[in-house]
Image (cartoon, rainbow, N blue to C red):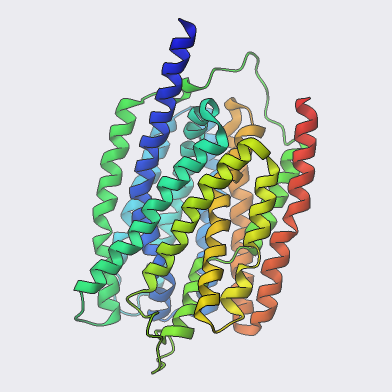
Length: 416
């Protein structure tokens, strides 16, 4: 009888993971659709490479650093759903509002992007925590991999939607075309909010998926967790934001920002969203593959994904060759997939249930601070020395590997 009950609970846990993943699908369709043209849009509005790098990093800094505060708040109040819903509302509304900024309105556009990141800061600790409750029953690597797969299907469809909009919106300036694209993203945004409330109605108490611990375990910054945080911080520092990548491609192959007469016959302002869509497909497959691998091989999955993805900057920025750039974007997608599945799964393994939102908050706060510092520095280096930018990016990511291995060794030793 108990086995039957457990099987029923497990099946409900997986249903929750899939349903919540579909919510993420439409959410990612909204803001990742925006991300596919964000760098080009800001450049078109008059922002420099350094400014784009700074704003991208600042958005990540706010979006990640505030997660520590909201993670602590979530653990204290246990208001998992209210925090998740509030964050989704801010996140979703800010994206189509980009359609309302005027010509040369890059400052307002940057403010909206920061607001969008604030929404993510509010929702992410609560969202990841309630996901972890169900994931603990189904395998954390597999569960976060499935969610990331659904995420990235949305991240693929978002840019494809914009590509279709651009096919039909042929009249007007590039600015007007991009504004129309942002307006259309209100459609998947509205679907996101509707499905979010449907999921809440069906699963009002997702914390019940994971049994309560037999004894209270106070949260401590154990050595293995500190080492892990240091490793993911180095990874974040070296992982170049896609806004800089797409700005570089715009300047090199399409002439959008520089007014060049010659353009690639394949890469142009209309096909730029498809490049991001391709990266998101790679992200989806990588997340599922490395998620399953993490459940079986542990840290080896994280080490392998880092080794594979780390050289992406060399292929994107060192060659004026479209095949090399496409290879670099593919490797970038692998890094993103691992980041969104394995990194979260490891936190679930290291932090007890009662303090998990705090653990996610600390993890993502550190990640965001170093993403900000890295994006700013790498954006500045882009204007000064592209070879130096490439070296900093690759070395920082590879330097994380020893920290991952030592952290895993300590954690594994404590389990036994």
